[in-house]
Amino acid sequence: MASRRAPEAGGPEEHWQENVLKEVSKEQIGFIAEGLFKELWARCGKQIATDQTALMIAEVQFSRGFDLLYKIHDNASALTEFQKCLAIREKILGKDHRDTGKTYCFVGHALRENRSFDEAVGQYRSALRILVALLGKDHNHTKDVISCIDDVLKAKGLTENDSQEYLSTLMASLEHKKSGDIFYEESNYDMAMAAYKKALIVERIQEGKHHPDTGDVYARIGKTLSKQGDLKAACIEYGNALAIYAVTLGSDHPDTKDALKHIQQLPTLMNRSN
Image 1 (cartoon, rainbow, N blue to C red):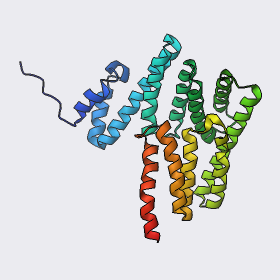
Image 2 (cartoon, helix red, strand yellow):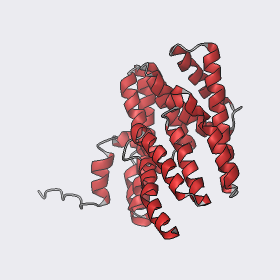
Image 3 (tube, rainbow, N blue to C red):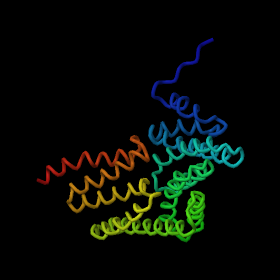
Image 4 (tube, rainbow, N blue to C red):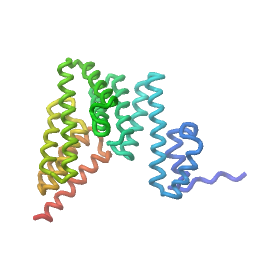
């Protein structure tokens, strides 16, 4: 009887065996998924095929996390599944996508159940940023996340007044950031800078001081300063962003790498301008 031939190194079969079936079963991802994956690989290339399959894996991980959290009440395992799902969605869809925002929210739920309140607030903040941008502050989904933040802040021991002050400041910061983005797209860099600096008011609140969203504001200020030609100041602001990203997201996260890339490139641009 002839032995089964090993899959070609670096080919679709090897990827399916090593990167898909070791994380999810054929039943979980669907029996037709392998054929679709191989057809995508052949027609569209490796990157598109692996990205689409990774998003299918993320959906399975999200479903597993949901069942673990609400049916089995295994909060720690649920958190692991949601975090794996989040890593995929952040990488492929980006951190401003609605599905990414939904995942931030459920990471927050799992953290809240584990009584990791500070981390839960951070995840809810990330979800809130996306919902405010996509749906507006008066949408029911947005209000649900605001309510979750309120609940966690009170569980941390904040009074009603302190919680409302935090939420008011946070919403104001998100609105300033949104305004800054609009001004930047219109090439109105002075107004964008003013709006981003107003957004940094959240820095006065302990819960937001080292959040990735705060790093985003520093990065936006750095980008705006670059457009204005103040490259030295831009380098400092990207450094502020990098310091937050490295601690909160890790060295391998795309945002961390992007901030570092800007810092490395700016000295070359400064030398050219001299």
